[in-house]
Image 1 (cartoon, helix red, strand yellow):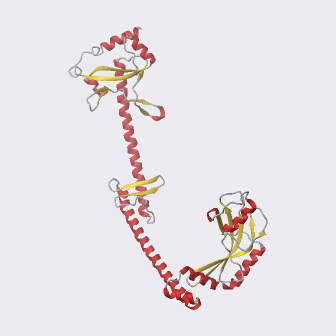
Image 2 (cartoon, rainbow, N blue to C red):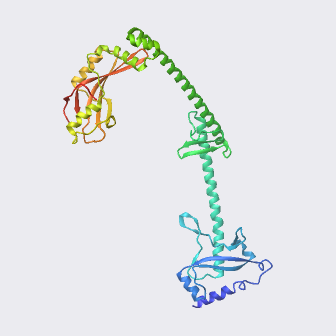
Image 3 (cartoon, rainbow, N blue to C red):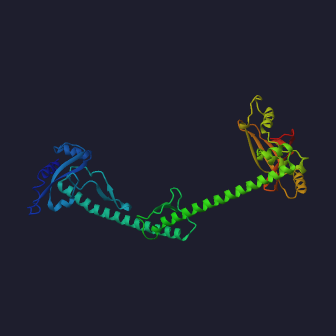
Length: 391
């Protein structure tokens, strides 16, 4: 109780407690000091005749020789430097805390001055550390940019990010740390040379791509003209009278002509049955054996066919492959495997079918035709013989 009473007396006479002022000290500034009181501090405030509020704000007359402990905002409001406050925090060094200081008893004027002096000292050290850290980061960033720029300029195969496209003034380069922006307006040294070089390479790549496209287009047009001449010559010699008539009128579809050429080229294998892609019909018959509802409607959208080169072959399949190779040495003969599934019900086992794909070069055309094997299986079953038409 006596301590609180003494505090009230000191606070009331805070200005008079200062020793006899000199010319500078006599000049004072009206300053606001804000702090927080804990529950014990609020009790002590009430006992001393205060208001007991958690947030306390008092007015002080700070002498001129202590004005370094005062901050003045743009509105001309002067405050004692106790918020934000700065404290030492172990390995973290000096940390900034935005909250006002918390007291368990109403502080004296000198305690507030000491807190402001400590804050003033640590604040200077805090910002000095930040300046040093920024300078260190800036040096590290500059070294990184110089290293990346050196590698980019030395390696003619490197390219800047194409989106956004590099300009003579700005570009992005991919590094181990992610995208790095180079800007002529802010970079120095080698880093300043990266955007114009990146832009030059970008434009050169565009020009080369356009040239390749024109070349490819020219080759495709030349090949198409060659195919048209080949088809016209073939139809004139091997086509029917009706096909020759339509060819002369320029209305014979290229697809029809190619199919006729394919039929003629693969005539030596005409004794073998062609692989027919009728998966819908095959799957309808298949569902009758495995689906609970036999009235299910199957459309082409319900059929999923996965095809690949066969990884295994039975003796009969391999013997047929060898027969094809012997009959047509210049052709490419491949054993193919087809998996036909019902997409709407994965419980239905898929149909596994086999075929032999024959590929041959004939003039400007690469012709393909697949021939069916007689054996088709369903997954989980041994080989069974089905009707000639496969999926």
